[in-house]
Image 1 (spheres, rainbow over the protein chains, first blue to last red):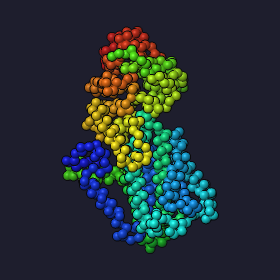
Image 2 (tube, rainbow over the protein chains, first blue to last red):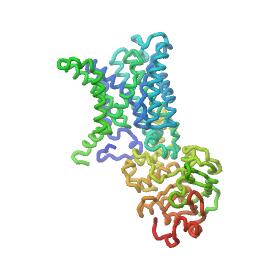
Image 3 (cartoon, rainbow over the protein chains, first blue to last red):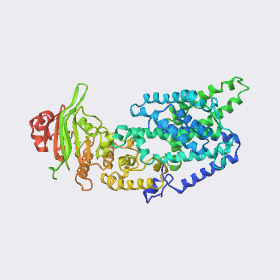
Image 4 (tube, each protein chain N blue to C red):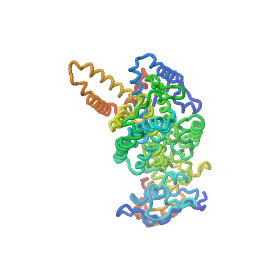
Length: 354
Length: 269
């Protein structure tokens, strides 16, 4: 909980329900928006493509955060729903000639429904047992259905590539990282806003109630099976949006992008960012992606000293990621988002300690 | 208060067993409209099991539960909540990570309408609904239970006595006709017990609420003062029922629960 400065008095409940309650905060958010819009114009294409990866990670991890952090349903198969979104969007455009926004919606809804299917066991099982069923989602969807069957549609081989200029929104052709960046910003901001709104209303409270105490939630009138499935649906939809965005920036889709490793990676992003916090998703995605890029530079810089290091980059990457999670669990188990709150409170209260 | 009115809740011949332990053996209860009805009995007598059967967390092995003329024996807990049965728990079962206000707001869940899309957009009906319910909560519940200063606090951080009060607040937010209170006084100090007793009488008698209470409680002083009628359980069987005065005079009760007659008011617990 953040502190409000002295002299801020709300006269209406609506003011207190607002996200940004003071003029200072609103100005800060305005600055942030301007920065996000101007950023790609002032920098090199490499950073824009990194930003797109961050955005993709955020979109992917939002659903994981919703399931694990908000609703308490542990999932290790989220890449499956991203894959469904990506493939459904690609097939919609390639096979049926649907415009990109329409196939994005179709892909998102399909991914949501697919997610509900694998969320059904959550009505009966919790914890470790649910992990097994979500891992089943991973293997059944990606390694079996998509690799064996979906990939055969249209005889295109194992990956579907989208010809240049197919990803269009109306007259706007998304054919560069820069344009994909703006699409990413729109999707990320939209998804976070929608989720944040859900969390401050009836639906989100029911989810948190299920996480904190499902028995009490039941006796307070929450249909827990329904709300768990709703969480799976929304998480699937967010995953589908992530998948649909991914093909717009990469122009092709292949089963190799949606491995179990990616599902675990997303759980790590949520752990590092802070469980249960939407800000945490953003911080976690930024941290993980940027650390990885920095590691890439470090490795190529050390090539002269250790000639074999670049070949082993994959191991270095995984090792660094594992180490980061361990350190966060040891020293900041509540994640970067909590650290951020602490920092803000420190400055809000300065020069006093509390 | 007129306690001869129509019957709100009737439990008929409830049986419940966990393995070889017969927690309830043919318990029947009738709670009349407008009553504060207390269940007492030694530890392990089956009071909480009985409450769990009524709120739907347990399904009795046999027997029926009729509420407001409807057989609710097979309904799920959330369906019973929708019919106006709220409850509190012996061991506090709040949503620890949420604020007091959010806990109470969750109690309004059944009275809110906004669905997934409306809530995701928030502006418009969903925001208006939030404000309307906030006003209701502030005026009717937070004021009544005197928890204004703590309403933005995280529940886990609160002292035990206040958490008990928040549980009552959350149950009230459901706008129930019947509240099941499972040991609302357990672990409270004298002052807190007096407050809680006052709140129970308030919600029972104030025309705004007129909630029926089913109380499972150990605190004899409170039970005898508050209740209109009392039932005594012992080893899953009902051994007495009646007004507090009648129950106190029943020899089986004195023997089973209170030990000796002199001990009745000797200590509060």
